Image 1 (cartoon, rainbow, N blue to C red):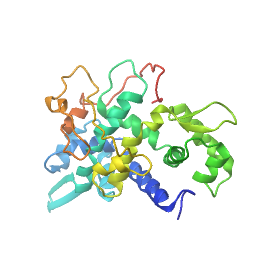
Image 2: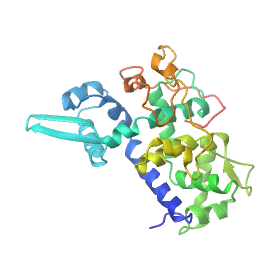
Image 3: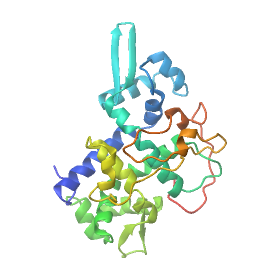
Length: 280
C-alpha cells in the first residue's frame, strides 16, 4: 500500500528506510550492536559490556534485534547460548561513521565534546520523527513546496492540515526552512546534507552495497564520493591511527566499534546548546 503520492519506487524506498530506522533507533539498540562486535558472546559477557541496562532490559532488546534480523542467537546446548551479529548487521556498521560525519558538521555544538555514539543516537532521533523521511524526500525532489501541496504528496489520505505538526518539528529540528506562514518549505543546509546518510541507509535497507549511496536517484551525488572525516567526537582521546586514512563507502571501515564509546556508562549531562545547527 502506498504511503505517499510519490512514484512507486520512491515510495518503496521511503518505506524501507523508515523500517530500517525503526529497527536501529530504539534506545540502546546501537550500543548493544556495537557491544556485540567480534566473536559471538554469551549473555553474561554482553550484559557486562552494557552494565547500565537494568535487570530485565537486555533480554527484550536482544529479542527485538533477533526478530529484526540483526542479531543471531545460537543455542549450542541448553546451557550454552551465544549472540552475535548477522551479515545484515555487519553491513550496517559502516553506515555509522557516515552518520557521525553529518552530526559533527551539522548538529548544534554542546558545551562538551560528545562521544560518537551519542552523535549517532541524536541524529537517528531526528530522522525518526513521524513523516520525517517522506517530507525530506519530497522536499529534496521538489525543491520548494507549499504546505498544502506537500501534504498532498506525503499524506494523500489525510486532512492536509495534518502536515503542519511534522513540518514545524522539522523546522525546529533545523532540517527544513521557511520564510514564515504561507511561505513554501525547503530543505535547510543540514537537511540537504543528509544525502550521504539517507543514501547509505537506502542502500543498506535494499540489500545493496554502500557504494550505491552515491548514485541514489534522490540523494546521490554521482560525481562525489563521501570520505568521512575522523569522527571520534571525544577529543580527549587520541584518534585511532587507522582513521587518518581516507576511505570511500564501499571500502572496509577503518575504525573499531569500541571507539564509539568514550566511557563505560551512557549518562549524559545536560548540555548548554548553542545556536547554529539542528536541535538535539
